[in-house]
Image 1 (tube, rainbow, N blue to C red):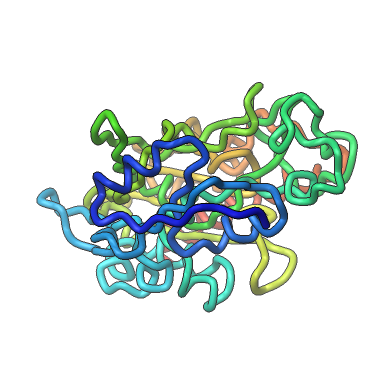
Image 2 (image 1 turned 45 degrees about the horizontal axis):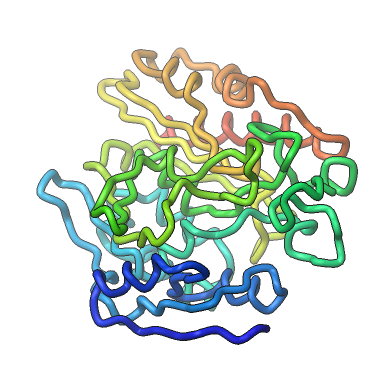
Length: 328
């Protein structure tokens, strides 16, 4: 690991000023960043410690939603009474991620900032990785790609986003509040992360130096009818092969609105826009969940070793939709 400077700013303004300098990284729990530093993948010139700033608060908004500070630990968020009762899908997603020890360290902001997962990216023994070395190619496309993307990929990158929390936040229509040198702005969850395109080294749409302040959830509509499903190789401490988050606003047996998100299938949490839109206005008793499972993965383009993900994603959405309709 190369040397770096360490800064502990006294307030958010000072943190943003320090974080705007070239080579600066914010650090909270460090569960992803430190691993990447050890492997020589990330080489920050300075680390800006934000743990002591007032970013670890969970409170209600004036509209009846929830504001979650960027420094809130994943364990604390998963077990918060308001999250468990109003946003149970988010609690389930957080508890499905990593191990208890990692959840006790990992922060909400850090979870949002996780780098996409790919062996060709995290192991410098592989020479081809456009994320690590732009223009070198993507080794996974013709290599081992069992865990890689089936939606939204490009010829430059087929890595997938690893977060469970972010899939649930997308289904819950969350927004991310950030602060940079130009002031504050709100970013819709679906716009926070990005597809690889021709710039796979960029995982998010943040500008240099922007600091995540909080995640803001709208008033809960899905508490009674939501479900998060994670399918993985083993029961603990494994990233999702495929995950599905379904939230339904049901009144009198009719779906007023719906949101379906998937994980493990793309470079970012994937919003199944068409399937979500077509559920609105339907009676729960008339829905064939398999039809909407197929609709959610429309346009999937599997690689040589991950065609199984197409059927798995379809079935995951179908199952999660059934569970959400049943209120389980």
